[in-house]
Amino acid sequence: MTIAVRTLDDGAWISVNDSRQVSVSDVWTLSHGVFCECEPAYVLLEGFFGVDVSGSIVVADTVGRCLECGTQDSIDRLPVGRIVDGEFKPYGPEGVQSIVEPNPQPE
Ligand SMILES: [Zn+2]
Image: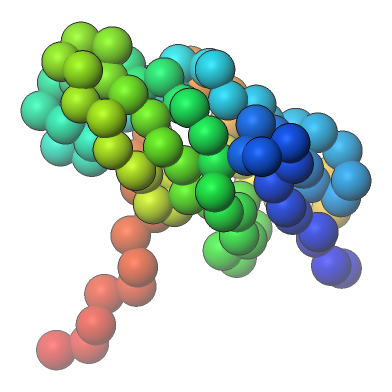
């Protein structure tokens, strides 16, 4: 089954299978060190510039700003949801997120 993901409206939305699913302007809670030194970090997303499917996980490249310390930076591969039985299940901004790490290189 093919999952079609893309950004819409200049990065304001992530579309999954032609349905708008994830918007910017939500505050996401990120664990320490993922984005800045806050524990946890409350990061307001300001735009998506890429989206991809990694296995069953939908990951977004985004830009955000920490509400505590003001750090503004890009976030690579933020998990925003996953595909279950062909349907998108958003993680939502409530949970503490960490970044999907690339597979570790074998020693
Ligand atoms: Zn911070």
